[in-house]
Length: 143
Length: 229
Length: 244
Image (cartoon, rainbow over all chains, first blue to last red; front, side):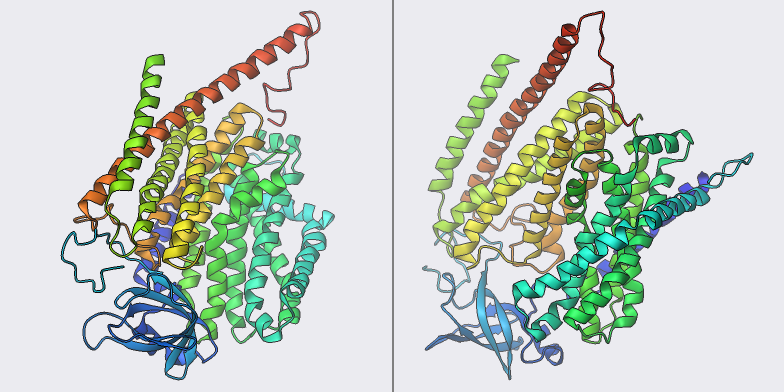
């Protein structure tokens, strides 16, 4: 029986190694809930104009303007200058908490250089602040 | 079945012998391939009628539908074997002194063979009805057995947990199908990854990991699950 | 025993009342406004789900080791309470998600893994319900209770391992909690209050299970008496598993 116990330990070791490979490897990159704007631009060739996917980023300051059937704005990967930016044409009424600077996840597909979205989910971060409790960098603080 | 000899056969041979027993029973009854496989085919045929027979859409959901049917109906096949075990058979196996882990692994082996056969039987139906892109077919040679093994081991575990219960054919799937989600994801994402020209090694590693972890869970819990312990 | 339990219920009621008062008076969130107050019930409910499944896991391991009926009752009661609070977490999260995210449900890793956890433990309860013999039930439930717990850490880590819509942990993380301290106090108070309620529920469920077992034993004894001493019923009904 000892040989079989050894085999069980070997299987356990293999499982641990595989788990490590999966964590180091890019499995999280293959199954993601949304792509960031820089990833979306880098993988532009994979996504034909009719292939739907989700894109998630921050709404750029002063980029939102309303159109007859929705909104136009730019989502960026980060706040630093030079971050990847994707122009978005959103069709529908914006989510309740939509504002410049907030995180959004949009569902839709490429249309040339712009991203045509028809579903918007506002991504709330893990920070909770009382109004006027401390000076915050978040703009447009009055709801 | 057991030839008279002075020394007990090695555990691996015992497991193989148990696998052969289960397969021989299936050959006589024909339950998995003559009943469950046609039922899976019917499911594949009905879904397009429910969601609309839009050819490009069906082409894109075909591989996902196939794997969902394999998962849901494959569990029934794995539970079939423990359902036909009479109490006396279980008792006899225990009296022969075969280690419970060997019993379960033998059953898992038979289940894996049956599931692979089931996958191969349903595959043509999915191809004909949905016409999914098939340029990635060589990967199926790896994915089909890995999914069959993982589902077989999980189903064997559910069969052992529900052995002898009245509601086992509905209870067993409830126990196993949520835990089989990584198998479903890996199988469908392999197709997705190869469609865009990326080798799906990560997903194959995930399948292998699920197989190994499930096998370990069976081996480690077999002793505790043995009746009368 | 008796006065202690009465105190526990009083403590739970008082803690819930205080928790509710603080949750309603804490400052609203800068962005979400009053919607954020749902956090004071959603997070404690999720915490209780983790806690009760962890206790089921511990009691299952304990049963496999010591074979005490008490541990089996503890595992069962805890899983039942845990399933209730997992369901409550999902419903409350959904109610919060509709106004804030804009959807009731989305295919986010945290949401999917939580739903799976809910169904797996529903399966655990169904397994217990389907098994009639107490020893067989305890053994199988203990094995499944140990195996099923493997996914609970995945639920908690899902927001860190995968890119998710659900916010990452605010409090249970290294460093300073990224939350206003007044809100944090309200959250902690509510977590404590929910834990007290959990203790009350767990205790009454364990007592109920013990009473049910006593009743079944008494009924068995009564029917055995009816048959009289001369005619004894064959003993392969309740006490021994027929297929063992």
